[in-house]
Amino acid sequence: MSESLVFDTAERLFADHATQAVINAAEADTWPQALWDTVAGAGFLDALGDDARLDGLADAAAVLHAVGRHAVPLPLADTMLARWLLKRAKLAAPNGPLSLVIENAEVRLDLKGNHLSAEIAAVPWASAAEALVVACDSRVLLLHKGWFSAMKGRTLAGEPSDAVSIDRDVPAVAIGTGVDAAIAFRLGALLRAVEMAGALEMALQLAVTYANDRVQFGRPIGKFQAIQQQLALAAEQVAAAGVAASAAVSAGVGDLAFAAASAKLRAGEAAGKVADIVHQVHGAIGFTHEHRLHHLTRRLWSWRDEFGHEAFWAAELGRLVVAQGADGLWPFLAAR
Image (tube, rainbow, N blue to C red):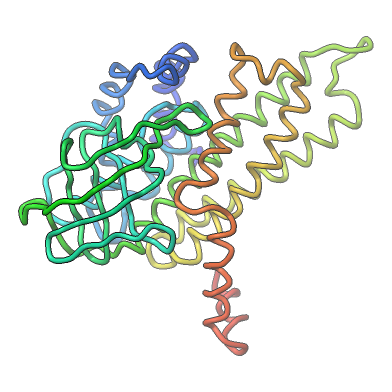
């Protein structure tokens, strides 16, 4: 994910435009319109394409890896996936940012005919979105502003996460078919895992740099064995999360059930361990508003719960493994 031309382009763009000042302003409820316009102009919103085989997944992952590294305060992964769903369902996508509601084991939607009723406790970016895209069974619904209510809330990262209420008839022209909600949810988990892998990578990079710069007792703290050991443990977690995310992207839609579950589970586990270590290395300065580290770690903590937490995906993996039976388990694992 980090060696492509797409990644290099995204990395430069976000380094220049997703500055600490922009992120702080976004967390103070100022929509980063200039950043959004730059991202949209770069063509990143449609990186997933519209193919059922997800031929654009590698390019989308490269962009989102850079998003995680720079704590970009935009619903880019959500909008990418929403636009892909709309294209698959042959619905015209609005130009602005989009939010998602995808039916899963923890989010139930009541869709009878064209009447949709739902109460969802936390929907990322709903209040900031141009429209809400809903995936239920094999149907996709496009709900414009005013067709749903969003009670404003915030994640630990300071990003919108709103309580959404829906109770209305949806016009037939805003309903499409052809996309399984289960596939959409797994894809969302994979995209979030890629963002987490990028944030983990940058958090470790900041910790290593700080350990080499911070002098205590006459030498950089990175020269002390205890610090080196902790950074090595963090590097192990970052590498594991990155490999899981990269493998899931390479597997694509053909093995999405196993790949997405593994990637999101592993990234979530790494998030907790790495955040602990990098904050210990930084000491008090890592918690200050002026430092970049908290922009990454607060998003890691928030993203762990979006598109399924670790326990959710561990249970999904367990069910998938059990379904193979005693004779099918080893061939199932060996094929991956």
